[in-house]
Image (cartoon, rainbow, N blue to C red; front, side, top):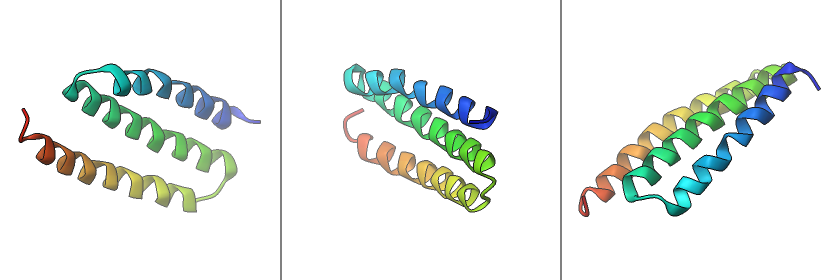
Length: 83
């Protein structure tokens, strides 16, 4: 286990507050928790890719970053009816 995996595990522990807010928060707080969790996952995948010395996982992180932006726009468009 190297330093990259240690920080990856620490970032995964940061997902716990995001999950709690997603379960109990208001609508916009849930959206913010979802965005924060997606950013944390992108960084976690990047740290894991560096720890494993696999560049293909960096492409996965880039794809997740783009998809999270698109999904947030679609989700906000969907929530626009109730806000």
